Image (tube, rainbow, N blue to C red; front, side):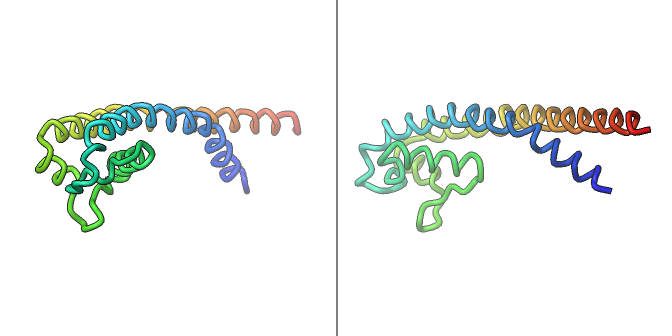
Length: 139
């Protein structure tokens, strides 16, 4: 009765290692982009106009992470952050942001999802084979 539930739980547990490594794989390029924005826009934090969110590296990383992962990329006033940055500081920032979004969304996220699903299914199948062996021994 609970075999499906156990298979789901074992699949989720089997995918945990992949999920943890994917966090690392996502964080490294986002850290590099956050560092770029911090070093180039951080000195202009007092001028506001989108640069204020890049005043420190942790804050910059959080903003880039939320822009890329959750697509929540607005200023406190509800203005799209990158549009404000591009308008006041140049199109180069828009190019970096667009390239980051393309590589992360279409490249890295899809690869991570495929590997996670593959590992989860493999763990679930391994559990299913183990359960069949157990049933055969019980007979």
